[in-house]
Image 1 (cartoon, rainbow, N blue to C red):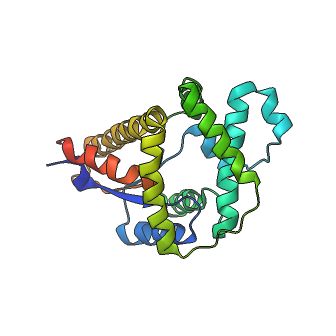
Image 2 (cartoon, rainbow, N blue to C red):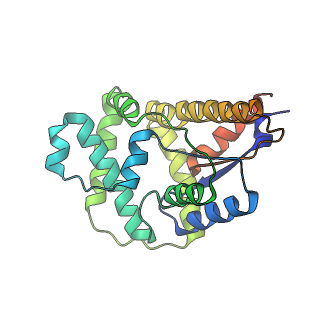
Length: 221
């Protein structure tokens, strides 16, 4: 019997209002023993206490700060287009965990470790990432239907894998392994506490859903 039997993985688009509704509905219907979210400790506190970082602030932290600044701006731009601030579905999961008294787990890799891996990327990939990141500062109206957004997302992921093989590995595949491993530990912990059929809801980005599920399905309890 695989670990996937005990974990319901919800793949979300971090800037989609529909994702927030899906998270709320799943938690209220499933009444899980635990909720796991694609955050680390630092990003968890950042969502709880949002602060605007200026470019000058980012420069003070060197290359790591500039990379995190660009990634933040990308999410902010998408949030404006889709009517939802980045991480809205994560906030919903956090709030419901608190209201319902459900244990909350942070299962993602530390953001500082992720940033250091990005800095080790081949020069070509870092240059492409910088150029594409700067494009978010150009105001372009990109209103789309939700189904078109999801289709574009799938195409984008395939393109990302081809153009950024190193970054795809460290940002997607390695984090899938880390999150799946943490979910397995949560299930094992619940079983050790006497919960015979644990129910865990994991809220992760859409790009991680299939990979995490595949790993969980390959591991036997």
